[in-house]
Image (cartoon, rainbow, N blue to C red; front, side, top):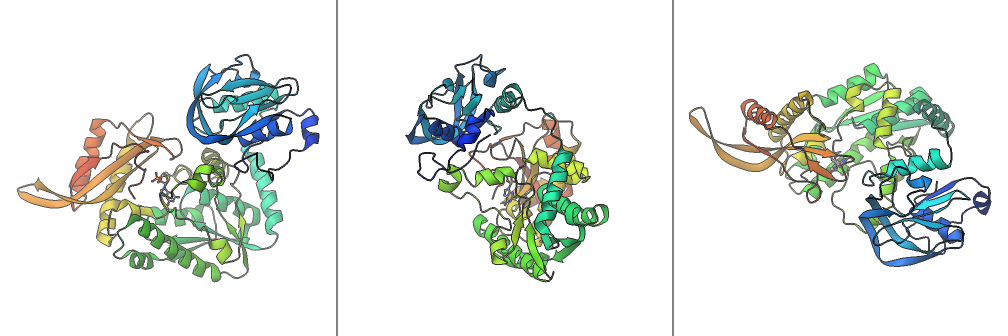
Length: 464
Ligand code: XMP
């Protein structure tokens, strides 16, 4: 399978395909840029589109009998992201599908078993993408479906051992599933050569910091150094209201704290990161190059260069659901494996405006109620992510005999595949009622609750 690569196969330095591979009779499948490379190398012609095609499109399958489209309806939704297009097919190829703006959305040479698709079958927005991939793998290439996560574990462990040798590595644990799985895998490979650092920035949800440390120390027996940096982060956040400045302040504080902790561990050469495949491809899409920065995501980017550490990224080829499956194979407890996505800057971006201890208490208590109630509800589908946001709004209320003038908490619950797009969850009114009543009764300082009914886009998942 050929996919990814530079933006344009028209550019002179586009990599060459191995002619021996193309002549060998091995089935070949080119995805997006991979299809363009195939077309170019097999004698077809490419053109640069006047306007790149990015986003959803309707695929019309012209060759319903093609094994590549077995079981795929005549029309379906696909995701496009390309600046070049195939203008003339190589000899022996036929057009298998098209979209309104892309005449050759799929091409194939049945005899040589060489196929290509211009759309992205691997993303959730492509309705029958998995079927197309499965059709190529089992129907055309006749690859037996015998891959198991256990073999991934064995191969990764061997690879990590040979990369690290006897060198030491460090890993920043965030409490999230990615860093947890990456650290566990590396620890399986090199044991005590790995030290984990957990920076307690004081912005996690109720009970989380304790849970992370207990799990990694007592259940997984990892070497975890806990740095209590709560005061430092509160100091860094003092008076910061602007969302972007907040994220940057937290990012800087994190790097400072982590660097200090890492320097205290002698002889470290490697930094373990839980980079996933979507992070790898996202940083290469035309959108990410040209797109506006919407939010500065907080991670340890930039650290490896500053500290001259080499990166170990054992999850680079996996999607999130595969990371969860890997976590289960490695014996990670369910609360970690199933943890909802949580922003690196934590509750700070769920407190609109100034972050203070008192406002942290309010959002933490309200969030615990939201999670408790939704976790216990038999919902289908279960929302993908849900939390409370403390707004800067205060409003008048009446409690008992008295007037109140207190905070407004917003509840957000979304359905999503990957957080890139999202819809607000249609929670039952009785559940919303319970959440609202409990928050107002149990969280001191809150007298009103609102439910966020905005999708992404146009809103984002987090409020800041
Ligand atoms: P947005 O708010 O950008 O969020 O629509 C999309 C998904 O990403 C999560 N998120 C983050 N994750 N670091 C992370 O690792 C961050 O700084 C960050 N900010 C948002 C968010 O919770 C949602 O699932």
